[in-house]
Image (cartoon, rainbow, N blue to C red; front, side):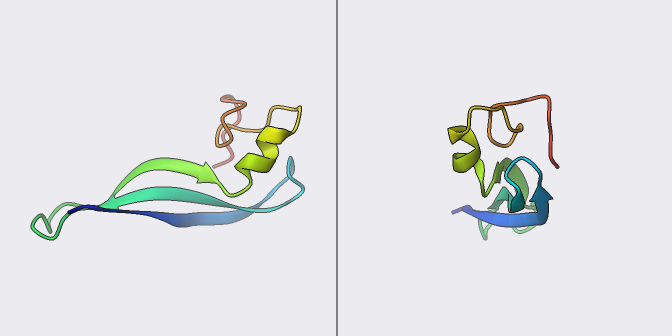
Length: 72
């Protein structure tokens, strides 16, 4: 069975949140019976997304509020 895990891609300073955040990728590793397949990245998220969504100002694409600003 395939395994899904969230891995930290990088840690950077976010000007909107005024602190360091972790940008994470959801990676799917193939089942053991398909060992030749590489892992696949299927989603991205920010460790501060909930706090940014609670603010009145649009933040970035990882929070889902401003698709024009890609922090990666």
